Image 1: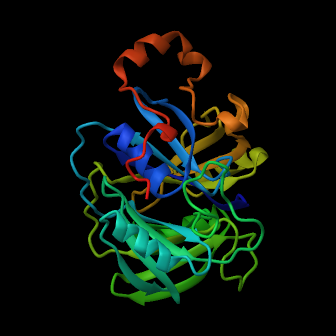
Image 2: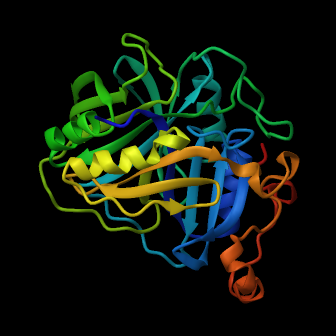
Length: 329
């Protein structure tokens, strides 16, 4: 039986300068810095989490700032773009905002949706698409953007798939996703997958999409500044063991279940080589600091607390975004 995924959970990319990463994602994109911690697998590297008001699953982008990293080399078997939803009518104002800050952008259509594409200062490929998903707007009290412009969560992550059919089969058979649409454009054949519990025919299901784009060469990319390291899919807290078992049954080699403090997860490589993750919704980002103080403190898991002074001495000082105005309009 496939595990029942619930859509996108988060994406993780590679940055360079920690403070510049904070300023851009908070000041220009309007995301909240919901957690400032370290990469648990490389504790001498920061791990920043940016997202909606509470870091809701499906809104989050995280970064490992690798100071001095060279530029990424794009290739097969990796995530190559991340799209966010913005409120209807917001794209014109977003183009103006990008112009104001000297960011080059392009507009095109995909799956009948107008999309604005640009990059963050490290080269992470970003896209904006208008989508009316109903309900209250996602924003936070000290956000630098009005509700009419605020990012409304992840819309789609594009994965360069040299073995598109095999990748799609794994996501459908092991993780319960379904093919929602197909398209052939300048970038080649693209297959859009939605989580299986989303109603068919709904233009913008909660949770967003994974887009698989066929690439002719199996030449893998090289991690560097601007890379998207991995993309994570949501599962219910109680379903993580079932998800791991389903991945094993599909012939993949998922990791053991890892405790990431704010969620539990397993990682695996899909048949084309991209790193994917399955992550739980809970316990969430308020497990170790109050909701009104998210992202202000430097947080460490209990097993690293004894190394706090050592790590502090080796990590660059970062200021909370309210003290930085580089990207303020």
